[in-house]
Each structure stands twice: as structure tokens, then as C-alpha cells.
Length: 79
Image (cartoon, rainbow, N blue to C red; front, side, top):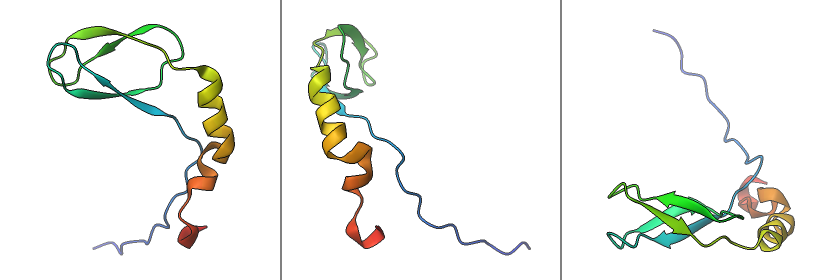
């Protein structure tokens, strides 16, 4: 039997902002990547589509900048 090799924890290389949108059909909160333009979302439970209100792209860029694209969010124990 092959020896198991230890794999070190992997650091994030980027980040995306996930928003929760309530499905107007089944009321489930659907996690979606923050859309910066009007688009359609699809519920992962009832499978129906619905229009999404976009988020402000400047706010998304600001959050990514403040968190250094995810690097500043790393647990200090692993930094």
C-alpha cells in the first residue's frame, strides 16, 4: 500500500463576495456571487429563475481591496 503524503493547508488566492437573495417562489435564501449588473438568478431548490438587483461594483472592489483580495482574512495562526 502506498504511503499517504501530508498535504499542507492551501492559502486563498482570491475572493468573491456571495450575496443571499430570497427566492420569490419558495422563499429560500439563495447564495449567489454578487452580480454587478442586472441578471437572472436560479434557485438551487425549486429551480425557478428570478431577476436580481445588482450590487454596487465599487463596494465589491472596496471590500476586496480592504481584505487584500482575501489575504487579510487568513486566520493569523496560519499566516
